[in-house]
Length: 197
Image 1 (spheres, rainbow, N blue to C red):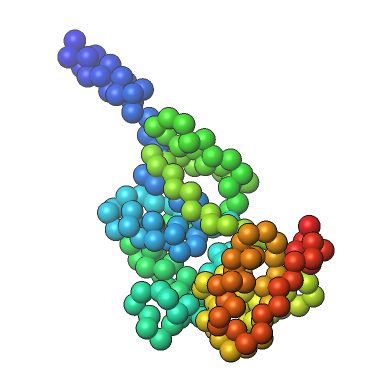
Image 2: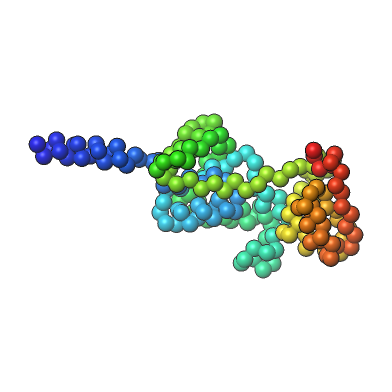
């Protein structure tokens, strides 16, 4: 009778506590996602990071001068490389794949890509933002070498130079105000055709 009771207890436990493949799934391989993975993996939690087809905006940053620990600054791509290396050192698994769906209800979360569905006890969404492109000729070629999407981050690089803020709405106006005291000449471009709409 005892063996049967143990078997029933094991079955009930399995029904109450479904197993997950990972403790943590992180969606996004930018600085937030990799930092989360560093912490969870260092705590010995099985961590999987999904790296989508859109790279982190940090990759295009020519110089990051306001990140702690790098007083001389660091290129965005190099900072990402170091964060990735540290996450891998702690045991993080990084898998390429765009997340198509995420079921985040219940104790077990399911994340689905083109190739598979993966389960975890916790899901962290760290996808950042996708910057709207203007489609101005040369934008892609000069990204990180004169074209920037972060006035606060990269504005100091253009000190005493002529630059332009391209955009619309309150964000573009705020960016222009932020940079107007630093730049020699700051025309604002707000034409809808140039802003991609």
